[in-house]
Length: 243
Image (tube, rainbow, N blue to C red):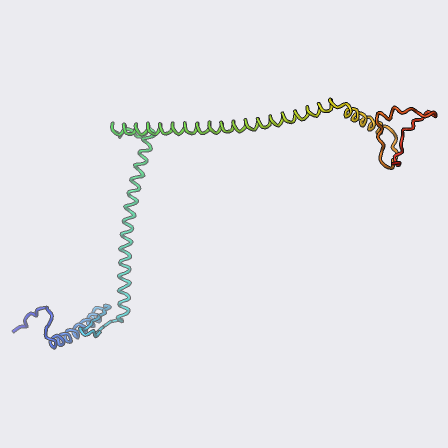
Protein backbone atom coordinates (compact mmCIF):
# COMPACT_ATOMS: atom_id res chain seq x y z
CA UNK A 1 0.00 0.00 0.00
CA UNK A 2 1.51 3.34 -1.08
CA UNK A 3 1.92 6.48 0.89
CA UNK A 4 -0.93 8.94 0.64
CA UNK A 5 -0.60 12.49 -0.54
CA UNK A 6 -0.01 14.94 2.30
CA UNK A 7 -2.16 18.03 2.28
CA UNK A 8 -0.05 21.21 2.46
CA UNK A 9 -1.40 23.18 5.38
CA UNK A 10 -0.29 24.20 8.83
CA UNK A 11 -0.03 21.28 11.27
CA UNK A 12 -2.15 22.11 14.24
CA UNK A 13 -0.55 19.60 16.63
CA UNK A 14 2.49 21.22 18.14
CA UNK A 15 4.45 18.02 18.68
CA UNK A 16 3.77 16.73 15.18
CA UNK A 17 4.67 20.15 13.75
CA UNK A 18 8.02 20.11 15.59
CA UNK A 19 8.82 16.57 14.45
CA UNK A 20 7.95 17.36 10.84
CA UNK A 21 10.11 20.52 10.95
CA UNK A 22 13.12 18.59 12.25
CA UNK A 23 12.82 15.86 9.60
CA UNK A 24 12.30 18.14 6.66
CA UNK A 25 14.95 20.63 7.82
CA UNK A 26 17.57 17.89 7.94
CA UNK A 27 16.47 16.69 4.53
CA UNK A 28 16.64 20.19 3.07
CA UNK A 29 20.12 20.77 4.44
CA UNK A 30 21.22 17.41 3.05
CA UNK A 31 19.81 18.22 -0.40
CA UNK A 32 21.56 21.60 -0.38
CA UNK A 33 24.88 19.95 0.45
CA UNK A 34 24.41 17.32 -2.24
CA UNK A 35 23.54 19.98 -4.81
CA UNK A 36 26.68 22.00 -4.04
CA UNK A 37 28.91 18.94 -4.26
CA UNK A 38 27.39 17.21 -7.28
CA UNK A 39 26.84 20.31 -9.43
CA UNK A 40 29.70 22.50 -8.12
CA UNK A 41 27.14 25.17 -7.24
CA UNK A 42 27.36 27.88 -4.65
CA UNK A 43 24.48 27.20 -2.27
CA UNK A 44 23.36 29.10 0.80
CA UNK A 45 20.42 28.10 2.96
CA UNK A 46 18.90 30.07 5.85
CA UNK A 47 16.06 28.73 7.98
CA UNK A 48 14.35 30.27 11.03
CA UNK A 49 12.17 28.06 13.19
CA UNK A 50 8.87 29.17 14.70
CA UNK A 51 10.74 29.81 17.93
CA UNK A 52 13.24 32.08 16.15
CA UNK A 53 16.15 29.65 16.06
CA UNK A 54 18.53 30.01 13.08
CA UNK A 55 19.71 27.13 10.88
CA UNK A 56 21.99 27.87 7.94
CA UNK A 57 24.18 26.21 5.37
CA UNK A 58 26.67 27.76 2.97
CA UNK A 59 28.88 25.91 0.59
CA UNK A 60 31.43 28.79 0.56
CA UNK A 61 30.01 30.75 3.45
CA UNK A 62 26.62 32.30 3.88
CA UNK A 63 27.95 35.89 4.12
CA UNK A 64 29.98 35.56 0.90
CA UNK A 65 27.01 34.12 -0.92
CA UNK A 66 24.76 36.95 0.32
CA UNK A 67 27.30 39.58 -0.77
CA UNK A 68 27.47 37.99 -4.21
CA UNK A 69 23.70 37.96 -4.33
CA UNK A 70 23.54 41.68 -3.49
CA UNK A 71 26.16 42.55 -6.12
CA UNK A 72 24.30 40.51 -8.68
CA UNK A 73 21.00 42.19 -7.89
CA UNK A 74 22.62 45.66 -7.92
CA UNK A 75 24.38 45.05 -11.23
CA UNK A 76 21.20 43.71 -12.73
CA UNK A 77 19.23 46.70 -11.52
CA UNK A 78 21.93 49.09 -12.75
CA UNK A 79 21.96 47.41 -16.13
CA UNK A 80 18.20 47.69 -16.37
CA UNK A 81 18.37 51.39 -15.40
CA UNK A 82 21.06 52.04 -18.02
CA UNK A 83 19.02 50.26 -20.65
CA UNK A 84 15.94 52.29 -19.83
CA UNK A 85 17.94 55.56 -19.78
CA UNK A 86 19.59 54.69 -23.09
CA UNK A 87 16.23 53.97 -24.65
CA UNK A 88 14.84 57.26 -23.31
CA UNK A 89 17.80 59.19 -24.77
CA UNK A 90 17.39 57.44 -28.08
CA UNK A 91 13.75 58.47 -28.22
CA UNK A 92 14.67 62.05 -27.29
CA UNK A 93 17.33 62.18 -30.01
CA UNK A 94 14.83 60.87 -32.54
CA UNK A 95 12.33 63.59 -31.58
CA UNK A 96 14.96 66.33 -31.78
CA UNK A 97 16.16 65.06 -35.15
CA UNK A 98 12.63 65.10 -36.55
CA UNK A 99 12.08 68.60 -35.18
CA UNK A 100 15.37 69.81 -36.69
CA UNK A 101 14.42 68.46 -40.10
CA UNK A 102 11.02 70.17 -39.85
CA UNK A 103 12.66 73.50 -38.98
CA UNK A 104 15.04 73.13 -41.92
CA UNK A 105 12.11 72.57 -44.29
CA UNK A 106 10.31 75.61 -42.87
CA UNK A 107 13.46 77.72 -43.30
CA UNK A 108 13.85 76.65 -46.92
CA UNK A 109 10.19 77.37 -47.56
CA UNK A 110 10.52 80.87 -46.09
CA UNK A 111 13.44 81.46 -48.47
CA UNK A 112 11.28 80.37 -51.42
CA UNK A 113 12.88 76.95 -51.83
CA UNK A 114 11.34 73.45 -51.98
CA UNK A 115 7.82 74.80 -52.57
CA UNK A 116 6.86 71.91 -54.89
CA UNK A 117 5.56 69.48 -52.21
CA UNK A 118 3.35 72.15 -50.60
CA UNK A 119 -0.36 72.28 -51.33
CA UNK A 120 -2.53 75.39 -51.64
CA UNK A 121 -3.39 75.55 -47.95
CA UNK A 122 0.26 75.30 -46.88
CA UNK A 123 1.23 77.96 -49.43
CA UNK A 124 -1.44 80.32 -48.08
CA UNK A 125 -0.18 79.77 -44.55
CA UNK A 126 3.38 80.45 -45.73
CA UNK A 127 2.19 83.67 -47.40
CA UNK A 128 0.54 84.84 -44.16
CA UNK A 129 3.74 84.12 -42.22
CA UNK A 130 5.80 86.16 -44.68
CA UNK A 131 3.35 89.08 -44.54
CA UNK A 132 3.41 89.04 -40.73
CA UNK A 133 7.22 88.93 -40.68
CA UNK A 134 7.42 91.81 -43.18
CA UNK A 135 5.02 93.92 -41.11
CA UNK A 136 7.05 93.33 -37.93
CA UNK A 137 10.27 94.22 -39.76
CA UNK A 138 8.76 97.50 -40.99
CA UNK A 139 7.51 98.37 -37.52
CA UNK A 140 10.93 97.71 -36.04
CA UNK A 141 12.61 99.82 -38.74
CA UNK A 142 10.22 102.72 -38.07
CA UNK A 143 10.84 102.50 -34.33
CA UNK A 144 14.62 102.60 -34.80
CA UNK A 145 14.35 105.64 -37.10
CA UNK A 146 12.12 107.46 -34.61
CA UNK A 147 14.59 106.75 -31.80
CA UNK A 148 17.46 108.10 -33.90
CA UNK A 149 15.51 111.25 -34.72
CA UNK A 150 14.73 111.80 -31.04
CA UNK A 151 18.43 111.45 -30.18
CA UNK A 152 19.33 113.99 -32.87
CA UNK A 153 16.75 116.44 -31.48
CA UNK A 154 18.22 116.08 -28.00
CA UNK A 155 21.72 116.73 -29.34
CA UNK A 156 20.42 119.78 -31.23
CA UNK A 157 18.81 121.23 -28.11
CA UNK A 158 21.97 120.58 -26.08
CA UNK A 159 24.19 122.29 -28.66
CA UNK A 160 21.75 125.21 -28.84
CA UNK A 161 21.99 125.71 -25.07
CA UNK A 162 25.81 125.61 -25.24
CA UNK A 163 25.78 128.15 -28.08
CA UNK A 164 23.46 130.43 -26.11
CA UNK A 165 25.71 130.29 -23.05
CA UNK A 166 28.80 131.08 -25.11
CA UNK A 167 27.00 134.02 -26.74
CA UNK A 168 26.00 135.38 -23.33
CA UNK A 169 29.58 135.10 -22.08
CA UNK A 170 30.86 136.87 -25.21
CA UNK A 171 28.37 139.72 -24.81
CA UNK A 172 29.29 140.09 -21.12
CA UNK A 173 33.02 140.32 -22.02
CA UNK A 174 32.32 142.97 -24.72
CA UNK A 175 30.26 145.04 -22.30
CA UNK A 176 33.12 145.02 -19.77
CA UNK A 177 35.61 146.18 -22.39
CA UNK A 178 33.31 149.01 -23.56
CA UNK A 179 32.73 150.08 -19.94
CA UNK A 180 36.48 150.34 -19.27
CA UNK A 181 37.02 152.28 -22.50
CA UNK A 182 34.22 154.73 -21.63
CA UNK A 183 35.71 155.23 -18.16
CA UNK A 184 39.08 156.14 -19.59
CA UNK A 185 37.57 158.56 -22.08
CA UNK A 186 35.35 160.29 -19.47
CA UNK A 187 38.19 160.96 -16.90
CA UNK A 188 40.89 163.35 -18.32
CA UNK A 189 42.96 163.27 -15.11
CA UNK A 190 43.28 159.49 -15.28
CA UNK A 191 44.10 159.75 -18.95
CA UNK A 192 46.76 162.45 -18.28
CA UNK A 193 48.31 160.46 -15.45
CA UNK A 194 48.40 157.38 -17.60
CA UNK A 195 50.04 159.37 -20.42
CA UNK A 196 52.57 160.95 -17.99
CA UNK A 197 53.45 157.56 -16.49
CA UNK A 198 53.93 156.15 -19.95
CA UNK A 199 56.15 159.15 -20.88
CA UNK A 200 58.27 158.81 -17.75
CA UNK A 201 58.72 155.10 -18.29
CA UNK A 202 59.82 155.80 -21.88
CA UNK A 203 62.38 158.45 -20.71
CA UNK A 204 63.66 156.14 -18.01
CA UNK A 205 64.30 153.46 -20.56
CA UNK A 206 66.16 155.92 -22.87
CA UNK A 207 68.50 157.50 -20.21
CA UNK A 208 71.63 156.00 -18.73
CA UNK A 209 71.14 153.62 -15.81
CA UNK A 210 71.64 155.33 -12.43
CA UNK A 211 71.24 154.25 -8.81
CA UNK A 212 68.49 156.03 -6.83
CA UNK A 213 68.21 155.57 -3.06
CA UNK A 214 64.73 156.01 -1.64
CA UNK A 215 61.42 156.40 -3.43
CA UNK A 216 61.23 158.27 -6.74
CA UNK A 217 59.34 161.56 -6.66
CA UNK A 218 56.50 161.92 -9.10
CA UNK A 219 56.34 165.38 -10.67
CA UNK A 220 52.79 166.55 -11.29
CA UNK A 221 51.87 168.81 -14.17
CA UNK A 222 51.33 171.74 -11.74
CA UNK A 223 54.91 171.55 -10.44
CA UNK A 224 56.27 171.84 -13.94
CA UNK A 225 55.01 175.47 -14.00
CA UNK A 226 57.48 176.67 -11.22
CA UNK A 227 59.87 179.29 -12.66
CA UNK A 228 63.55 178.62 -12.97
CA UNK A 229 66.15 180.19 -10.64
CA UNK A 230 68.25 183.12 -11.76
CA UNK A 231 71.06 180.68 -12.44
CA UNK A 232 68.85 179.15 -15.11
CA UNK A 233 68.43 175.71 -13.45
CA UNK A 234 65.18 174.08 -12.45
CA UNK A 235 64.93 173.60 -8.68
CA UNK A 236 61.89 171.29 -8.63
CA UNK A 237 64.08 168.19 -8.57
CA UNK A 238 64.15 166.27 -5.28
CA UNK A 239 66.77 163.75 -4.57
CA UNK A 240 65.53 160.25 -4.19
CA UNK A 241 67.17 159.76 -0.75
CA UNK A 242 65.45 162.85 0.74
CA UNK A 243 62.06 162.33 2.36
